[in-house]
Length: 318
Image 1 (cartoon, rainbow, N blue to C red):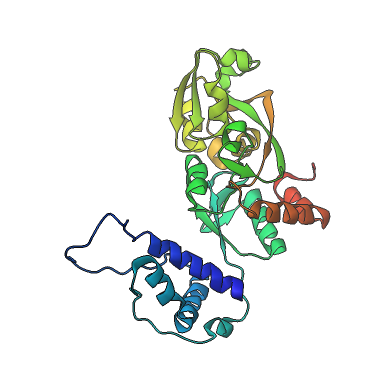
Image 2 (spheres, rainbow, N blue to C red):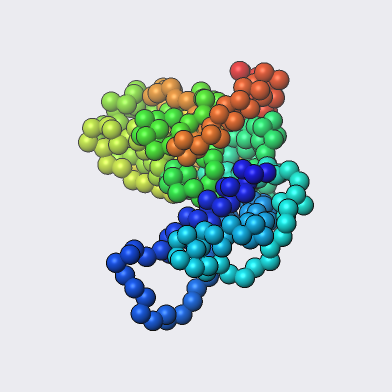
């Protein structure tokens, strides 16, 4: 309980300290007044505990003390004080974690009607249940996932996210949860002309922006890269021969070819794997949530939950 009060006090001190002025300056005339508060994401249950903690701190005189320490007099707004306010709430419930997902990566994550479905969706829900927290899926583009983690807009990125050195320099990854790889999608007229990455050099390639396929394609000699907001858009351009080929995650390529939308297209997957890659859950650098994810991932592997989810989406090939 004391830790909660101390944390709230520190948070308030930081907010108040932002308003302080150095000793060199003097306020000649006040042009108006402003009130500061602590902001939370919509739906974050932490709000209730901070609000109660502030009432308890006001009752104990801590807010007045902090204000006097930094400004020479109390500038705290007049809000209700309450003794033992936190005790009304009992224990602190686990907050909901915001999960950023690119829903254009079937069978890993996609929409079916109004529902979010896929291997990644089922797995992160199972991990949340095992770890004792709720998850809220937030749909966003693949290229926005890492920046959103860095800024703190989301807690976890789950989207067939390949563990790469480039990404690992900006975010932390969980232990690998799926072994994947990159393969090549092309027009049926070009399949026999492509034997490997060498045959992509000097060509125009379609990629989904922010994808592992985009990173791979950019390293190829003399290639011209055309970026698209989704894999589906890139597939259609390859079908129209607007690009020689597309480098993309193998499970995404293979799943797309099984769908009704692909039946009238002239797309084929080249029978070669360009790289073997691992998928991982990404979190902000230094976030202890990484260890919770790892422990829960290990637990769902051991109790058979992971295998059930895998078989549901990929068959009994594990």
